[in-house]
Image (cartoon, rainbow, N blue to C red; front, top):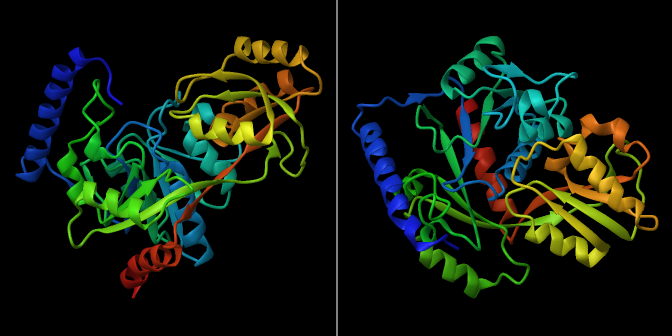
Amino acid sequence: MFKVKWLYPLGSVYGLGLFLRNQLYNKGIFHSEKSPVFSVCVGNLALGGTGKTPMTEYLINLYQSNNVKLAVLSRGYKRKTEGFLMANENSNSDDLGDEAFQIHMKFPDVKIFVDEKRVPGVKRIYGENPEIEMVLLDDAFQHREISANRNILITRYDKLYTSDFYIPAGTLRDHIIRADNADVVVVSNCPENLNVSLKNEVTGKLKLKNNQKLFFSGLHYEKAYELFNREQAVEFIECVVVTGIANSDRFINHIEKEYKLKKHFKYADHYNFTSENVNSWLSKISELNEACIITTEKDASRLLKYKDLLKDTLVLVIPIKVHFYGDEKRFDTMCLSWIKKKLE
């Protein structure tokens, strides 16, 4: 899990810095401000790949289907803009960042905002949209300037924060003790064979407080759609896969079960694809017989601008959806109770 041993001292220094920073907040020297509107934060302690965006989408579906007027605020990581922006029909991944743009594409009726400064961002959202009843804060757990009403912490089954270490030796970007501030911990990317014994093993490692709720979730791959025509459903066998996500192992395992994978073009998380990259994929496609490109929804948001280059190639996108292991109803009831109590 960890990198070379000589990075451990650097990780320890980073962890000490995190501890001191959190102490300054805990003692009130640094100020945390309450959100002016009811807010739910979805975050983690580690770098990307825990499943924050699928969880945010799950919550959007849940609250939207129960007529909650909500907005989403994201940092807009890797966007080419700055400051406060609201998604609109002309937005793209360069404006919003790939994850916020992905959410906007899937939920065009939901107000999606980006702002690297969460406190003024939430204030402006509520000030300009007083009808909003809830704001979902995507990836804001480590941003202590804002204090959410509820915190959902995501940690991967195969990389629990209790077994991780601080960057650069590990992937932790916040102090482990901060997990105590979570109202809910969701263990993501659980294996299909998850059973009571495995759940108990994880529960013992996390050692949550009595008031904290624990849930186990996995990812379900849904039917592929064509990038430039979402209604089209076409089945190809041979494929070239393109990914620019934190962890592509599970995605590749799924592809290999359903298709004949000929080449995997693997890039860093949030990688900004270039026309040269696209041409290299097309060159590989030309060597194959009736092959397609397959990618993730997050990566697809960064490919839309290459529609002209890809117009003669089938690009399939495979969406993912969060599912809970026997606890979905309990999770939904809990999340809905938060906002219902607030609105009563």
